[in-house]
Image (tube, rainbow, N blue to C red; front, side):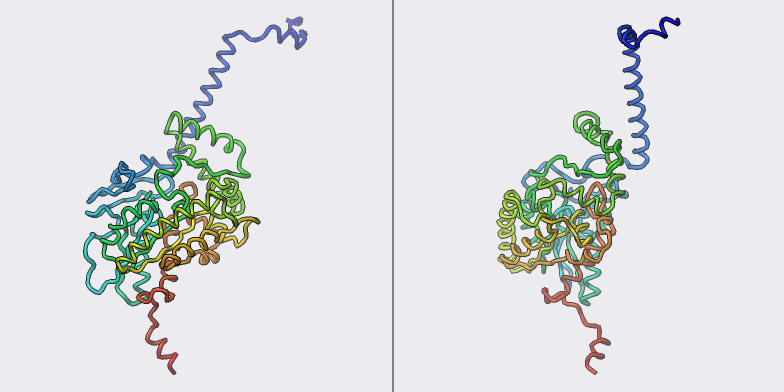
Length: 399
């Protein structure tokens, strides 16, 4: 025994471990890893609710030319990973409008909203979305009876809006409002949307940073139930990053997803704008031919809102760049551009009003959008929506 203990390290290496022990060690390591992942999954399922499909069962996705469509006279519920239990209810025209499609009531000024998932109110119950809140705010400001009919749909990018613009006109609008997001300009059509996009992370807990790529790979190629863990870890990482870290992380994506906030657009983004210009020209010409007032508004994504809220960003970037380009495009074809981005300057930590991983505005974010859009719509560019001066104030001014 003493001779064995006195043996040199070289002799121990020669002895080595039996094959059985190696197999046992590897098996124990794998079992430990499985146990760890299962424990994380159990915790994640408590923190992150079961989300089911990406889109609810009452939305059809099998028509590439028309994009996603609501099933007429249907309703369903979805528990989004980061949101509350959400109801999607569609009228007989397949719209999440909160009212039946058909003629407007006499004396009503009708706005028809076109666009994609921000206007649709993805992951938010309809009564708390900006399309539901906006008519009330406008009615209070203008003294008129105003309604908003919502024609927007998740995944309805500009190419699909153009194809389905006849439905927008058929809703008998007094005004058409087109909500645009940076993704709408980048992808133009739903078939260009990538299946998966990751945001970079900086200054994160090392073990989390190393686990995320593994979970992502496993999720994409093997077991879908790892979604819970991946979403939980991303939610923790993104929600706990401060504003500066979050913006830095977003900009690390380069032209892949942050190209629209660069001070000088890359050739690919110049191409996106050229295609968007052509699509916008077609849409606006249809509105003009029908004699309908047309307006458009850019709704910022989470990182863009954060940059504007900070009032500071790295050299070579400009969160207003896309806003200026879209104003030029919309106005060149005769439309009215509604600019709400400056309103985010006074909103501290504006990114907190979006779902951290999903990226859509939450109910609080929709309330902000409604307030900013109402303010810009009633400033005088649209005569029918000018703010009414209260009678007492008008009398005081005349004295």
